[in-house]
Image 1 (tube, rainbow, N blue to C red):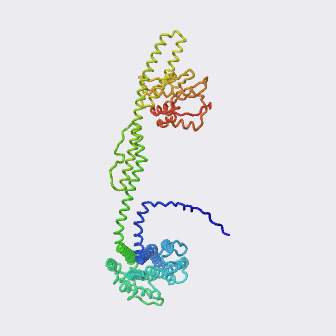
Image 2: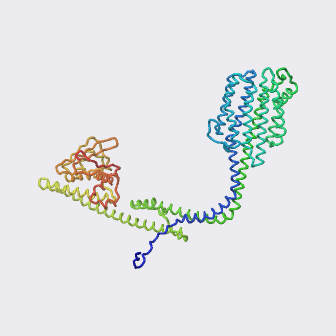
Image 3: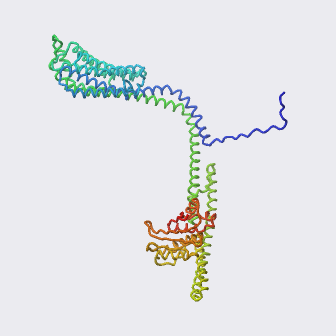
Length: 640
């Protein structure tokens, strides 16, 4: 049987506190929400163009990272191939020259492997990945490079044939050209694809010229080529002339065409053409091969002259491909920008007002917050401190009520009224304190005059009745109490901001200063003075130092056993005069030492004095030490 619910009024639901949303958040949401909506729509439209631009940027990056080392490797292999052929044919090639050339090729190969991430030093992969067509070509180049050391050993040992050694280099170079073609063909852009084919054609034509150089080097001093070598020479001549005439010159830009015309019009290039024609027309067939004419002796000098021009032409073309790809990517990005601008123009027009309003409000609130914090943490404490010292206050440093009508201005005016009320209260309090100080100073001065007259009267009585020892003792007792009364009046004068009257006009010895300070203490007979150096104190500081020492000695005699001695020592030290007072007063805790020393090291404020009126001497000593720029420290003695 189910239990029945008790009757009675239902309990009220718990009150849920609503979260307060910051004004900044509301304003930002007002500006962001429509912007995000339109931006999403525009991003979908522009994505295709951006992806295409990113592919071009990636190709440019890969060209700069892989293409440059690849071309350098091709140049070094071509040079080593020609030197290897010359060495094989018996031309004067030193071991050192061949070793240096091989070292340059090895450095180019290592740089290529690092850039492409192939071979034994994979750090970065190809932009199209190792599984793509270009990745396969680069791996093929790296695989052929692994055989370079073994072919060099065959060359050094003259193992095999010259055609095999030269053929190895030729195969690696062919793979390099094909890898370059596959890596930077740009099939998605017809114009860039055409420029890439032009660059590959230039590389191929240059390779044909270098093959001519290798074939002539292989002929050696005997100027005799095998039939296969001569056939390769003829193929190289025909191929590079065909490439230049058909696939290169018609498509070269004007600047590169001018460089090509300058190169082909040079004396070195004309010597090249003359030697090629002479070899074709004036060669002689022999039983072992083909005898070349004597003109081939001029080939090496001519080749060294025009070869840098061919390399520069290749470099300019490759750089043009990368620059044009980068420019096309920039055009695509600009097209995306225009698309975004066109589709988002209306939104920007609407949200501009919201954004400007938001920024204006937040900026004004930020300035208000910064100024409020600065006034609360810096200006107002400084103003209060100046008022407490009795100094004038610059009203321009305080915020003023300007009667603004907007909400932020009304908040600023309200804060200015609060600051003004606070400053007025502190100004009135400082004026009252200053007036009380003047009042206390006046009372202290008048009372001090009366005390001085009383001391003079006591001295006269001592002179008159000095023969009566009992009366003289009582008069001396009265004189001592009066001196103590004068010191208390001077304490009031010090705390009121006044200065102790100083009748001294000449310097005073430290021993006399200690005697004068001890004489102001009621129980002066217990004080033992020790002046360890003959030194003097300037007149303007005598009264202040004497009063400070008297307060410390009085404290020492009052809070130590009646029959114990209080020793005061004074001596010169490196930083000035050191005075040490030693008593046998009560035990003080470390926290007590710390609290008292804190009040002695600087003049304490009067708010602290009000809470510690029973320790008036500490405050007097603190004020005197602050005026004298002295340091007073209490510490544990050997008596505990």
